[in-house]
Image 1 (cartoon, one colour):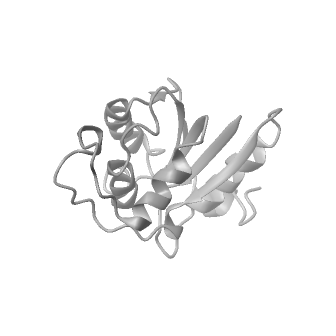
Image 2: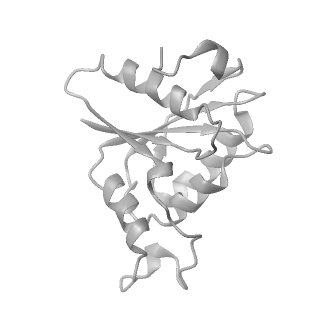
Length: 158
């Protein structure tokens, strides 16, 4: 199985990368699983501004940087989205990245891992509303971390 872990924050002082490394470390215990880190900081996508929704635009001209992200998602068998909670939702950069997808998540399982003052509960709730529109199947349970991530998970994800 090819498991992608999306880091849904690009802030300078973020801790989502620590959480993603922890998830990756745990995923190494799964048999026949290749883990692929997809850090949104590596994709300089402009704000989504295509005239037509990607799912309804077979002749779309996708931004080259966004295409790199879309192409990274396509071969995955399953995805873990690691997201902080910003202002009672998930990050704008994650929303922007998801808006570029058309069918790359269709029928694929997605595990949500969130962190924040309420464990990222509202971020998870909002993602549960958006992901079915992309055809994704979210796991009914989510991992929600309420402790200060910087105090409980090291830079190496331990």
